[in-house]
Length: 247
Image (cartoon, rainbow, N blue to C red; front, side, top):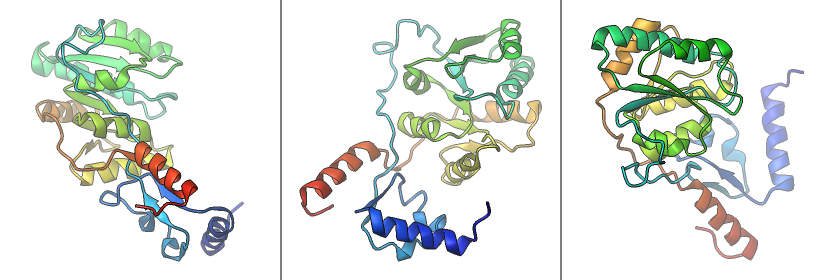
């Protein structure tokens, strides 16, 4: 049922004031602010605190701390996310990889394809088997470590993936899943900040191959985005519960 915007904002404000002691926003205000997405943010009277992005801390991947099965030195990571490949990112990337094979005469890095717990669709798995320098990695619990060692990441723009990219500072191409309302805006924000490159939704295999080629040599991404959101949230909640002054 459609709800008028003014009714929605009024209901949210009343709910916050009636049931909550504070509002924690898992964002860095230098990247985005609540006011950008909620027009009545200035009417919120309870304390509002930006925690920073909630991201896992990842140690730089070196020969000494890689998993034993990390035997490839130069590789690109393709992650399809936890759901089905609705945007066709995996198949588009494989098409682009074939284009790269022609451009680089087989000298391109390896492509490691990571999927959710459900694995890849049968058609994708079959396609992978026919390609050289491409490997299916399935679901990996140590995925952030793989990401830290990659020369480039290709993915959608889910929160966890983008948080991992901020933590590992891996250069990235983001092709948001347009069926997920948050991903397009997240990709836009990171593209605007120079942290990642947003792939145009109309990009075909040749354009995607060129974007991969253009970004392989970028090196680690420099940024000052706060990614300590988990620890900051815990400290703030402890202060709130104990009655101590906030930060």
